[in-house]
Figure 1 (cartoon, rainbow, N blue to C red):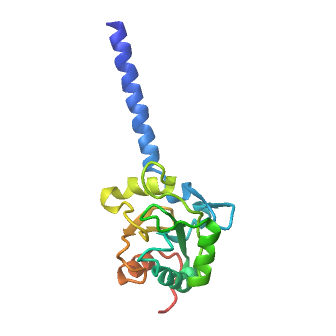
Figure 2 (cartoon, rainbow, N blue to C red):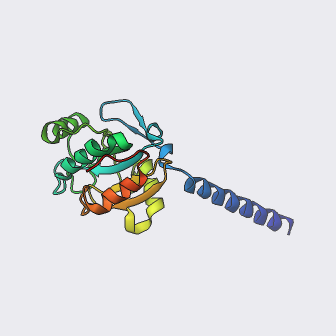
Figure 3 (spheres, rainbow, N blue to C red):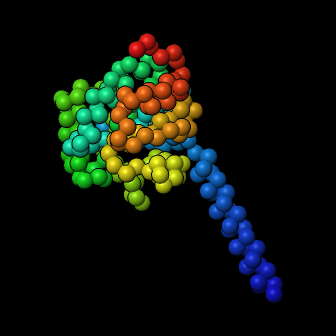
Length: 191
């Protein structure tokens, strides 16, 4: 009987510790995650504290690749108001980002004149997903999990995930523009 009581107490403590661990995961913000910059070196999301961040998983050979142009327009129009567009290349969908980090950077610069920050190529889904995308999946549930290239996740200045948009939602759509303008830490420039 003493053994059974001891076992029950251990299981209860383990369950409590597990629940506390899950609560700690739930309390994370985007600022807890670090990518590697496409240009080399760490790219901690905490460096964007106080700014609104639109995180987009990208691919160079996708039907949505043309969205790079609109993402650059958002960056040009709203960066002084506190917006950061962050491109996250991934080869997870249709093998549409097969190049090296250098090839991706060159493609984006040459074809779209991209100068917003980009990360090195990472996985964005499944068990091998970058920890940021694992966190995003835990925040948005099944419906908002990344299902293709050019999913967009809006991060508030405090690091909280506030909205998500599928590949089908163009970056300059009124829905995205309204959502990001509501989060900008500074006055947005006139359209």
